Length: 258
Image 1 (tube, one colour):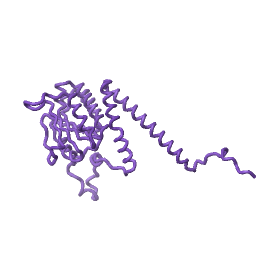
Image 2 (cartoon, rainbow, N blue to C red; image 1 turned 45 degrees about the vertical axis):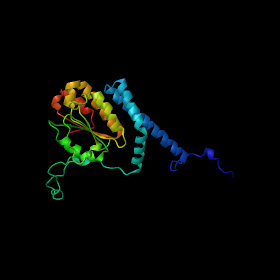
Image 3 (spheres, one colour; image 1 turned 180 degrees about the vertical axis):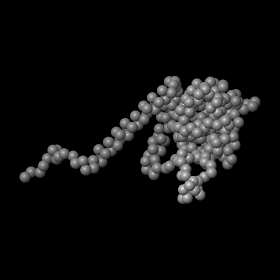
Image 4 (spheres, rainbow, N blue to C red; image 1 turned 135 degrees about the vertical axis):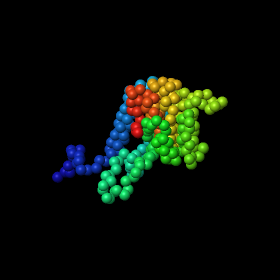
């Protein structure tokens, strides 16, 4: 009796596919997901009203950071998942009546830290909670950019790691900085190795000087910039400085709102 023809053999679903076929499947699946993610990002930015020049800047920024993002993705797949620092803040406390946890329920929430790629908008009359988060998060980034008319102190942060950008400029020195100039100066620190923590408390000033529309568009661009570069963004503002619809548009730009 002759041996059965292997060409007529049906594939056994329990058998593992050949290595080359498994590689092809993984590659095509990754390619599809990458293209899908890129197109979704373009649609998202376009729906936010970005101009063609702004879309080009966003695309160029992503292209420049693509090798580093791919490396971070590779390391992330090889390393065990890490819980974000915000998990402890968002998890509800157990009832104090439970004797197992009554002794460890905190009396106040300790400010968390921002992880690379995250953006947080803090609504407060004067910078307070945001400053605590700033000082807690700053040690985790190689650079900290402060966009403020009244720059806050960050104890323990070396001057070499701090970059101050004053919208009004320095007395007797540089001229006032508009949002376009500030955006240009933020590209270097955020696109450097390790990214940067960006702190901004001048929303009200920009709304007065350049209008809410320009300010909100800048916020959308900046959120996209920190996401693309592995940086982090912390913004504090008084929501009374904007009309309700504009405040809502601004808040929707951020991943986290407090």
